[in-house]
Length: 163
Image: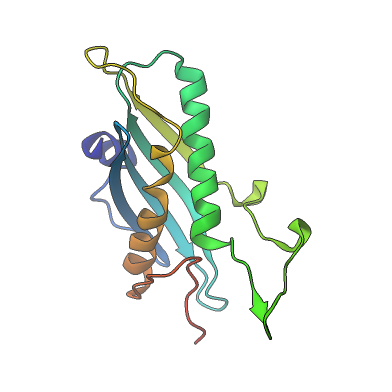
């Protein structure tokens, strides 16, 4: 997966100014995933935006490639939410965003250019694909933020400190 994701992304090229590239991988329940993310950081606002994500996924024999691709891409979008937006906020012991209308999840405008590589292993039984694809996007984003800014963020949602 690492090689497939890195090659498709073009790993090794220099990032444009204000951009960073990050790579992460993981395994869970018989599935293996690698994701390369590209972020752009607005210097003035410290806003981080994921502009591209390449994900390679292997979970044994693929029975329905279209459904699996949708599952992987949905997991990437969901992972972007956890990495950059989703948080319950508190003040004076009260929840400040108790309604879904005030809870920030990814919007259509937050979805980066996505590429999904499915590695079909007919020599292996099919494994679960529900949880595994989400685990690489947040650390890939964190690594990309570090590459762009030199700041290592270890909590989610990831926010750069104000200047």
